[in-house]
Length: 356
Image (cartoon, rainbow, N blue to C red):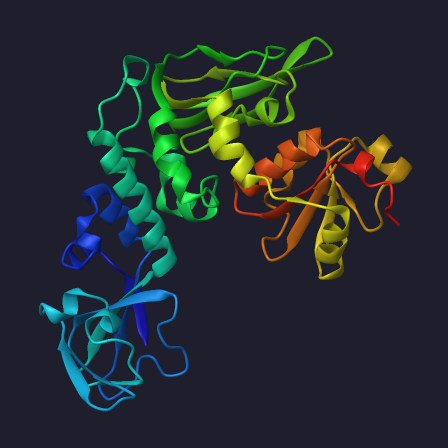
């Protein structure tokens, strides 16, 4: 079988995908696979269709059913507008009558996109009080963190569906200018930010000298550490260019986004996860870590956790801890919003006196 990418024209002919905006369809086209299958082959032998929506784009395909009977689908027909197993139910066998093309889409991703887009569409119809006049309208107009891949794997991937509509209502879009200071080091934490467009720099004073730590772009988030760990801002964030930010105030952030992402476990539950192949991550300073680290723990201080994103694998579970839970909750959020399977040791080491 030969594979290629889908295109916008293919997707807008399919149900229920065609209900998405053009922006969403163009984005989704890069995440779909089109496979070419030769005549007389069974395209699903040994793999089935579990977890995917599969459409017949071209050619003729015969499907057989366990209860008896068969059905022929023709690419481009009304019957082929729906996924293959939606028209007549699950099938037990398949044969390409001619050379065919099949388009495959991750079903979970489709469901996530549909949930966000439909709730945002509905929310946009509702009257808004004046303070929310600049609230978001529809995810297709959003970039960065609201892209399909981030909805499935990023900050919002574990967000309860019940929170989505309210979260979209509470985000506020603000326009910013070059040189504008968004967050100042030492200030109290008040907002969580997503960059919709533009670039900004992150700086911290070291020995009285400002040092640039990072440059952020569309799709990046900042401001979460002070909100999760209840400490003052540890860096200054300044716009390098004009742009647009999506802003969420502290109370809304904690209620709708932070807490749903933080999965707390007891010390006994954490030890079970470690025994099953999980990894302890100690986010304290090295001097603290050396004094009373947990057996097998990896030391990644909170200030360095972003540097570990490209090093830690997403194929295992992590349990994050510190002394009190304050620093570890911030680290757990930073990891969780990037798709890591991470748990927070409830109460930190202070509440785990029985540890071995």
